[in-house]
Length: 231
Length: 231
Image (cartoon, rainbow over all chains, first blue to last red; front, side):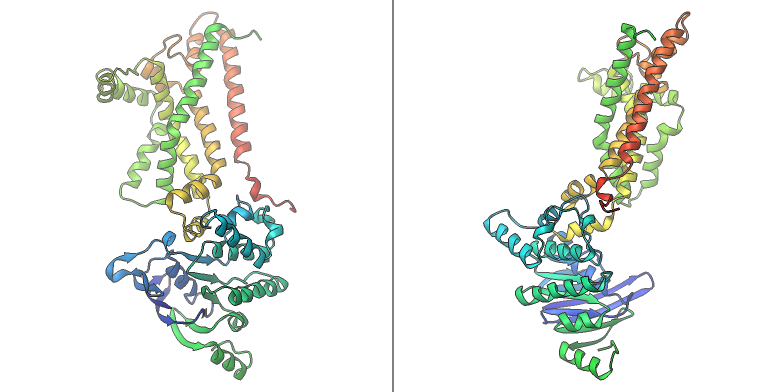
């Protein structure tokens, strides 16, 4: 379960969000500049809001009223950035292992499982700049998962990919959802990604929550409004 | 051209030793200060930067005089060092201090520029993978700025190698002890029949300067991970 309450001003955007959800995959859906990525950054600990509270599964990660802020490095939240942000000087293998736990038998099994799940075996010794966009995103997802996160944040994971790569990465993300039990927050402005991955949808506009609905209602509204993206 | 005379070899060896030690001894401080200036905002930052640039702006003779006032037998630091049996004024160790002080601003400037060029978003990504400040610095910031740091070391070495004004003011011109290459050239210029020696040492200086400049240019030229093999 996630509880997110944020009051923060970023440039011209006045962020004022209150979100509570028990969904396993929650989508933050809205146009660019709505404040979705700022919300993700606050969950990850990369942005400390002027006031707010973040709690995951009952554990408080941020509470400005109490002066509590768990550093990003101790939150155990896997973050897949829009641009992957793979470390350019490290091979794919070392990128994957960067946040991984102990190098014991369990750790090696986990590494092998993620490499197999995301089909990264042939890429392990390559440098990130030699990867395609889709490959980079798969490595970024694998790297985040190997840090044994309690939550996974996906920031526009398919943006910038060509059509074929989008289908491919979306397929991997669906498989992850099926096979791993990780609470996920997906940020996107593509309704088809929401429909494919989310269990619940929060529509955000100009820093405010407009609506929070289960995925079935989101899909039904989409169907009713033809291509209208609003839930 | 004739080979170098023994005292000329001595001056060259001393200059190389002074230049190398000046860089090695100041590098940790330069890394710390450059990181502070690149990553932190704090009161007194402008004052600190102004003080850092002083050796570049002041006439070197004035810097040498200031060092003599500080490290001379009656200076506060000189007395402190003297109480534990260390004397630096008019010793080759003093030449190292003078060279270090003159090269330090260049080293800090180069390292800071290298730190500034590291994509901060990569450090944020490392943070979400559990890396604390020290691990981020060692595994992300340092390797990604390594070329700038090495280029800065080469430049600082070249500056230290050619240091004259501060050195002669602080440690004078003592053959075999403080007579560095530039001081030896200056001495030969003032001695009848010294021109062949001046030419030899000037050529050596030129070769060292060209080699240092080429090293800095080649090293700073570009990191291999920035080049795609399919470019």
